[in-house]
Length: 199
Image (cartoon, rainbow, N blue to C red; front, side, top):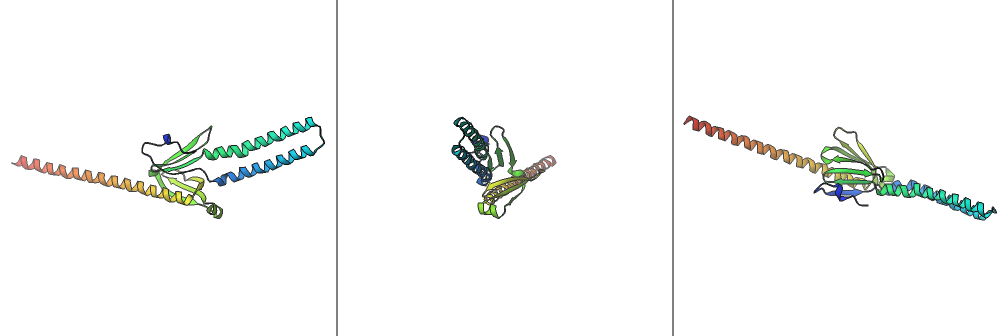
């Protein structure tokens, strides 16, 4: 599921687009595998029992319903949540979106970002994931867990922040030069007017 282009401003360029690392799916998928094994054992026990066919059918339906509920909650739901969660870095902002029926998200303009950090332990380093920490102006630090290739994302975001600051500095410098130029022109015009009046 790619990030919708209509959510971007005109001329905005995507630098990085990630879903959460697949590590976040290990827990619920493991529970689903356990539930599948238990459902298989229960179905085998029912088939090997000597209970009448009607009761066996009811018990098999109960097992199937239980397995279906486990599949929906521990397999389908996490998978959809994973696919609908987006971490996007553009040349203008950091975008985070999640949710299917109820959507939530946050946008952080690049120019408001003060510091960018990342954190990962030994296991996260082996799996090439970690937590990205973004501190913006006048806001509490925001933590984004399970970011794939977190060191690369950190580096790209840091470069975007530096580029934004360099562009802002250049704009202020050019504006100061123009103001200074207008000041000199005004002084020259004033001097010429004084000389004309004196003549």
